[in-house]
Image (cartoon, rainbow, N blue to C red; front, side, top):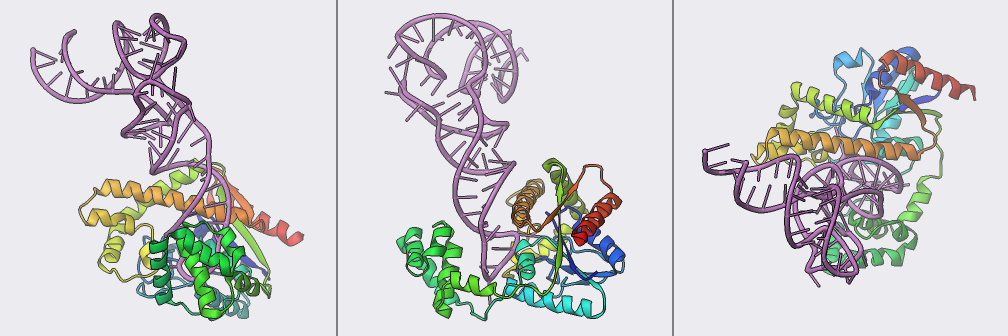
Length: 311
RNA sequence: GGCUAGGUCGUCCAACGGUAGGGUAGGGGAUUGAAAAUCCCUUAAUUGUGGUUCAAUUCCACACCUUGCCA
């Protein structure tokens, strides 16, 4: 397969199983596109593919980074490209599989991130400014230098506003300019992008609820407790499946309450993922029916790939 | 059965007798260096039947349902 196959979908939609089947069919290897599976811990919480699930198919960008490290899209795009080149140099098909839309789109669109550094002191300064003068004053600050971006941001979205100001502060050009510059060279690769979705939302919700229960049986609490006891995790602290259980460890809430919260947060995350994937019209939707087996889904995926290649 | 306090969006809680409002869930959207994060928008309700009144979620009566206490 000359093209790169991309498998996306909301959490618990069965991406991993599909990617492995496609790897068998197309002589492929899997590259994970997941902001949490990159870390060396949280095996259960991040639903890392187990050796049994991997079925001998090589998986890349899984479990290679210490949770005390921070990570960014720019890092991902770079590492993913290295993996793709490696896989293709060996004559195999690259299959990107994951639910982190930002990572996937940044790679597919070949976004170029220059080496503008982060300035944490500046961020603090801006945050204090916003606390003192209000969010709208902060947004006005941005409007003066980059009205285009200011127009797209709500004043409560302080994090984004500060980032936009930070880019200007550290590089001298606005984030609008940076965005335009980042898109100058299209990707050298061709992609077939498949997005998993369900015929109705309830099917997905049921799968999520069931999967959380499964995770609990497979040691989710141990994962979460390790996170709880190791507070220094810049990116990894956000993982769903860990932070929701902290109130239980602190004795503030019952386990049942925390598990319900965890399921809720997972459902909401899945909804956000669907919104992200819907936006990109290149995504070919693969609708999973309530009674579809893995073999049915694989067949639908192969059909999508064939019809896409025929065009 | 008696007493008691209630019945308002799916759920939790508001509304001097005068436009039924908010939290949360659900739905939709945004997304360029922390993205499993962050932010925005939004659907949706007065238990029923009478009565008082220009006007009833609000006052009165009855019915039904629920809390708690007593039997």
